[in-house]
Length: 356
Ligand code: NAD
Ligand code: GLY
Image 1 (tube, protein in one colour):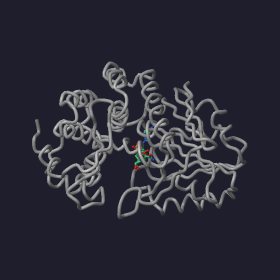
Image 2: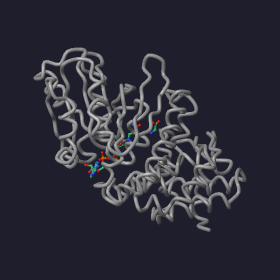
Image 3: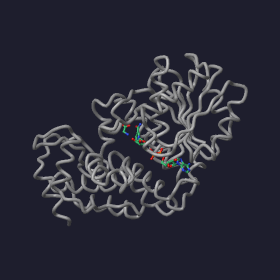
């Protein structure tokens, strides 16, 4: 079992990572300060992993709310369901909301916890690789509107994160590999030696070796924690976590959120960002190839057939600008991402056309 601390003063919290974290009842029980707890989960995760969570809460006043699994559940309507469940529970200001599931449950649960009585304790129990390495850490919470993703949200840090890597055994292969793209991202943006470790341990990760997964999650959370400690509200360094994301969001939109999982779109987007960096003379093309090879090793997509012109139009919309210049996260090479202002739209189009 590994423990890692996010140092944010009185809003700091521990992350526990390992196999069987959920079986140690005290890890969850000691995070609940009051007498009431609401567990939010989804229809896939709940039947599998609720029992150890409820066992740990034995003796408290507990209610459970289960939403349909999938992104379509991250709505204001479901947040209202959570508020109603909290009201029915008689939840006081020292009540605790526990999110058991992937990023959808975590984002929705955090959002509701931030708002109920202006903020109650919140515990994240992430059960997807993406949630373990990204969404459960850092306090970004949100729901979607028909107008767009994550439009309504709050920063609200959890009180504890419990990442039991045993839960990943039931995760669908495609979801697991999409999560690996976000792991690769940490190496790409700030840790060349981690990228090397990922290459050397690719077979173990694909085979879901518990030791390899535990290290990958720990190293990713260390990076995420450091970035959040430095820049909680994303006024600077935290933006580097969006490496590949502006391209990726355009791909997700073009695929109507059905063709690509988020991590898959980010994998392609990171390759595009790396190739654009080479095209602009910022970084060697060989580094883009290194990244591409690693993502391929994880059987992640690295190219898309979308029209470059359409992609760039959507990227402008994503950045809420119609200007010919975009602000993107690019890199100087593996491990050295940076924010680049004023990238010319025509350079992006030219680079995407040159599919070398
Ligand atoms: P998700 O929560 O929809 O989970 C993916 C699927 O896996 C779902 O069908 C779920 O039911 C299932 N699942 C979850 N755990 C499982 C398990 N252990 N075994 C079997 N099935 C399991 O999606 P996600 O990929 O975890 O998260 C995506 C969401 O996270 C998006 O809404 C995104 O906006 C958000 N996100 C937030 C942040 C942040 O910083 N807050 C960062 C990245 C992504
Ligand atoms: N997932 C991006 C962030 O937490 O900032």
